[in-house]
Length: 66
Image (cartoon, rainbow, N blue to C red; front, side):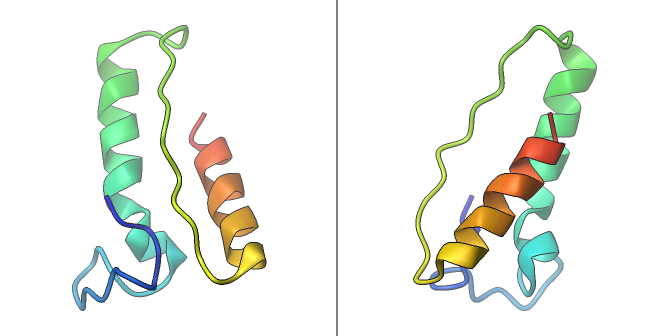
């Protein structure tokens, strides 16, 4: 799952802004949480961008997923 705008050049719902690039991650986390309880740890290996602020926004969006 590529969240970085440097490599995610998609033109569909899974590309574009940060919300689109995180859409697949959000769907997967939602389904994992539906299957497992809240004690189940979900981790995500975050890549890097050329923009530290974008990295912070991405980390904050991932944190909101629980």
